[in-house]
Amino acid sequence: MPDSKRRTRRPLSAAAVLAVLATGSHATAAAVPARAPTFKRGISIGHWLAKMHDGEPYGAPSFSRNDVVWIAQRGFDHIRLPVDGRLWWLADGSLDEAKVAPFVQALEWARESGMGAVLDMHFLPSGAYDPNSQDLAVFTDAASRRKASTFWNRIARRFAREGPYLRFELINEPMAPRNEQLNTLNAALLAAIRESDRERVVYVTSNQSSAFATLDELAIPDDPKVAMLVHYDEPAVFTHQRASWKLCPPDMPLVLFPGKVPDMSGFVPPGHFAAKASLTELKAEDVDAAFAEAAAWLARHAPGKEVYLGEFGVYEAAPAESRRTYIATVRAAAERHGWGWAVWDYRSSFAVRAPDGTPTPVLEGLFPAGPPGGPALQEP
Image (cartoon, rainbow, N blue to C red; front, side):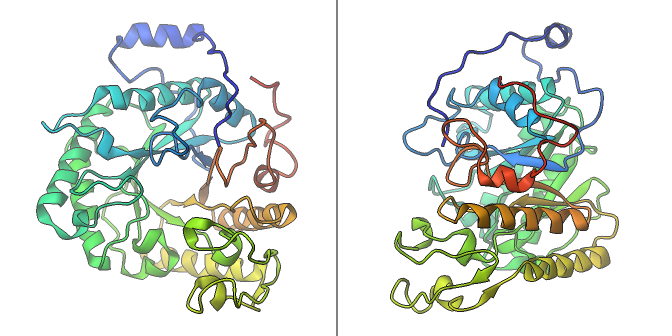
């Protein structure tokens, strides 16, 4: 969860001030970092601009420039910013600049720290509003698809002057009723972006929450600036143990990684994923095999395309040493195939940073020897 301790804002650096003066007060295209970010080691800033928790307002000041400095010092090279795009959309089809403003501020912080940023469109404007779910009409209804396309067209024009440090993610964890419906939506959204921006790297993902298993029905756009995005949260009996939103009770037996799953009889219904995993062995080799299979498919069907593991993580209920081991295993599997990654997430029940500001086992699993390139700087 976000740190309740209030932090003071640092003044802009001299370079940042000159960049703002050079581009004008409304422009978002401030100075691009001298070296282009690599998008190899990222972190999602969950529950800040989408799916806010515990009464936190949208764009709450609990996430600030100091947090981005901390993230950069720990060895991350970019931030992934999940956004509820429905909150950016006004009835007249324009963007609500007051809602866009926190994102623009985060871009400034990323530039100042020499980091990249991914605009993850967690939810697209469509029809019915559910704060935690995407309306399926965006996949099934032509009018809703046009609305979402117009929205991405507005976004692309709004940020067209930004440099390559900013990337777009079309939609988070799509759940189209049929895989081909996602292909149709992906094509429409990408075309809307390309009307004004042909150079921006855009991530395209597979159906059923960006699963490896649905890659084989994903239509790969013929676009040199498209990169592939997948998520990985297997085995769920480990990564989401005791998670209430997955209908896992707080007293279910703890699951270790690696290790044998305890008998879940009596704790979850017979058809629950935890019940199906009862008494199975969880091994690092199985993670490696899943990544190898996905990488082989991508090499055949999307040769030369950059691949990005957009989310992976472990719920805080999992034992600490198992969290370290699992996170290190998934990171190694992704990097073995040359994939960049973004862990979920900064401060929540999957956090790399505890409420008191200290690193969690997730961060220790990512960087067991400390930040790449040397020791971390002093706390911001």
